[in-house]
Amino acid sequence: MLMTKLRAKPVLASVLGLGLAAAAPAQAQEPIEIGAIYILSGVVSTYGEFAQNGANLAVEEINENGGVLGRPLEITFEDSQLQAQTAIQAMRKLVYQDQVDVLMGLDSSGVATGVVPVVPELQTPFIITHAATPDATGKLCNEWTYRISVNINQNVKAAAIMADESGAQSWTTVGPDYAFGHQSWEFFQKYLSELNPEATFSGSPSFPSLGTEDFTPFINTVIDAQPDGVFLSIWGGDLVNFTRQATDLGFFEQDFEVIMSLGAATEVLHALGDQMPTGITVGTRYWYDGPENAVNDAFVKAYREAYGKVPSYNAQNAYAAVYAYKNAIEKAGSVDKAAIRKALSGMTFQAPMDEVHFRKGDNQAVVGPVYGVTAENPDEEIRKLEPMRIFDGASVTPPVSETGCKLGG
Image (cartoon, rainbow, N blue to C red; front, side):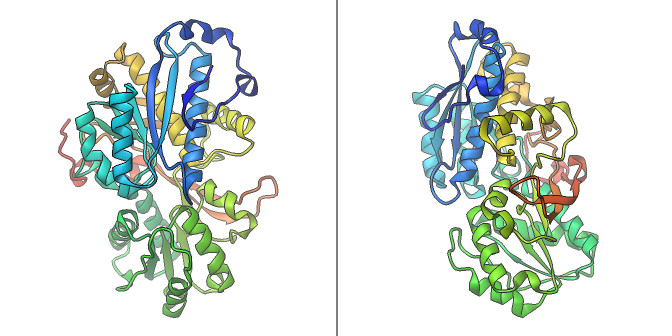
C-alpha cells in the first residue's frame, strides 16, 4: 500500500506486479514519515512531477515488501514554488506540524542556498536530490544535510573535459541569472583552463533571468560573437524555449561547438521531441539507458509500467533517496533522527544510477554525470545519446579540502 499525502500521485501495486501479502505486517505499525519539498507549480513543475513519481515508486516497492523495520513509509509533498522562504516554511511545517522523521527534495540552487542554513534548526536529516550548488555541501554544509545527486562541480568538470576534447578554444555561455548559472560558468572556466591553458572566455557572457520568454537578444549576441564553443547551463522550460527559438534563428547551424550541461534531462527531451537538434553534446545527472546493473533494470521497467515513460534523473534521485533512508534506518535500527543522520555518513548503497557513497567530510555523494551526443531514436519519443559517456564520480569530484566544508570526518 502506498502511503502518501497532498500532491503525491499513487502508483498501483497491480501495475508494478507486486503482491499485497508482503505489506501486511508493515501496515499494523505507525508509518515512518518522509517530508518532500519540490517545485510542484509553474513552468518547471515537471521536475517536481518526475521527483514525485520516483519517490512514490520507491515507497510503493518498500511497503509492498514489508516496509522498514516492519513499519510502512508515508510521504508528504510540499510545493517550494521556487522560493527559498516558501521552502523553509514548508520544511518547518513538515517537521513541527506533520512531525516527519526525515526530509528530502529541492530543485533550485537559489532555493538551496537559503534553505540549507536552516536545516540544523530542524534537527532532521535532509537529503538534497536535485539542487546542484556546491555551497550546499561546501561552505554552507552541516551535519544534517546530504546530497545524493550530481552537483555543479561534478557536472561541469565533465563538461570541461568534453569541451577540451572538442578542440574549441574560445568559449562563451548562456546561463540563468542566479547561483546555478553563474557558478556553472565560473567552474567551467576553472576546469577548462586547467585542461587547456590556451582556452579563452568571453568577457560578456549572457545571463538571462529565470523564466525569460524571448531569448532572441542572447541568441543573436552569441551568433554575432562567433566563438568556437558555447556552454549552455540554462535548464527546464527555459532550455526548451531557448532551443526552439535558437533553431528558428539558425543557432545550431553555426560553426561552433554547443554543450548543454542539462540538455539530456528527459523533462527537456520529452518537451522538445524531434525539435531537439541532433549532433549536440548534452549532459544529464543520470541516463536511464546507461547504468548496467540489476537495480537500474528493475527501476526502469517498473517506472515505464507505472508512468508510461522513461525516468528522468530527478525521478531516479528521489527514488534513490527513499532507499537511502531505508538503508540508513535499518542500519540505525530506529527512526531516531540523530541515529539516521549518523548512519548516512559514509554509507554506500546500490542505486539505479550506480553505487552511491555519501562521503564523510561534506556529505556529498561521489557520483558522476552522463554526457552524450543527441541522435535520432526511432524506439522512443526522445532523442538517444550516441555516443554516451558515464563519468566516474571519483574523477570529477573535488577533494573535501577544496569544497569549503568544515565538518571534518
